[in-house]
Image 1 (tube, rainbow, N blue to C red):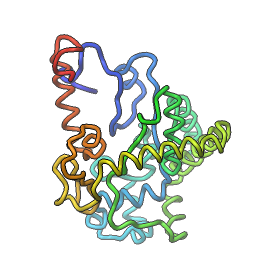
Image 2 (image 1 turned 180 degrees about the horizontal axis):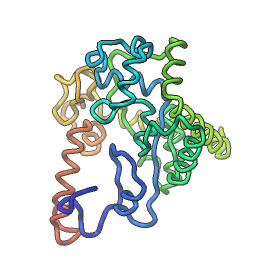
Image 3 (image 1 turned 180 degrees about the vertical axis):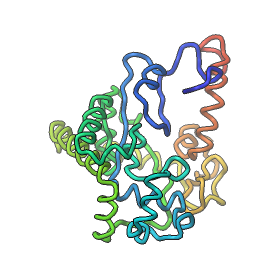
Length: 285
């Protein structure tokens, strides 16, 4: 899964990146008591977002609405996931399942139960702050450990407000919808057990930390051309974070760093660690 020249002799502590989940491979890679966490998003919002991200209008010649009306195009995407990644029931695909399995309801129920067994916590994007508080407590972290900045926000937001279009997307991604409903309800139950008022106070505390750090670090959101390379997003269609002039704080830079530069930085650090004879050599710094 990860080449040996990238693997330190003492193994890994955290594996947190885009990946198609495989419980056997992940368990071999990580130590025995690893906590597994994933995140789900409203399937209609996710499908609309990915349709735009992969520029499917250009590849199919159809708007999202027209694509959902076209049996031929939907069948094509069912059979051939775009660049072997994007297609129907995206979340179940990312969790390692064959999206064609779920014409049978019992297969879907089995998959949902398996996801529930494999993951200690399933976050919900629409309840992100509440999810982070529960994750913080599960991992015995502090609030400062889960402070975040928003990345990859589209300049032209497209809310899925057309109910007919939304229902078509949910019908097309029906298995993902069932998965999402199950874990959304499970998270709601966890929040209820945690205490609504207690959760509200914890979320307020998280937002306070986030706002303090944001006001200290960030000058503005802008197109990629005005942002430094390290904080420049992958496309000018989404906002990049522009740090305040003179900010050399490592925390600020790491919070604002874009996904690809961050990945390259971590990959280089990991390679150095793997080639280091001792976990506390200079490459660890």
